[in-house]
Length: 138
Image (cartoon, rainbow, N blue to C red; front, side, top):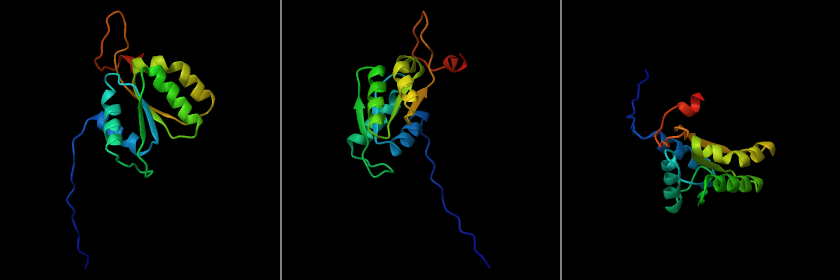
């Protein structure tokens, strides 16, 4: 006869930004960041964990480097990738537009990178920082 064992599952409700940050942090060696709404939380979580010395799945504490612009974050990511570092960054659709020159370099050189992009209204005549899906549908 077999006996069925049951285990109690613990569940936690977290935001999409935190879920993304947890995954990214565990699989990266470095993350150049520039806070931009609504993706700022992702970068801030990673920055907090790095400052606390939390190790990831690679057994290292990822370097989190805050830059002065989205272009700076993308340029730093490009440099890290050229050096063989597993890198990631976080942005919103508006910031992604400012990263395009560096993204062309990264793609053209066949460098592996992950860019986590949060949906946000793309600026028109009336600037908005609120999340919507107009950028995804465009």
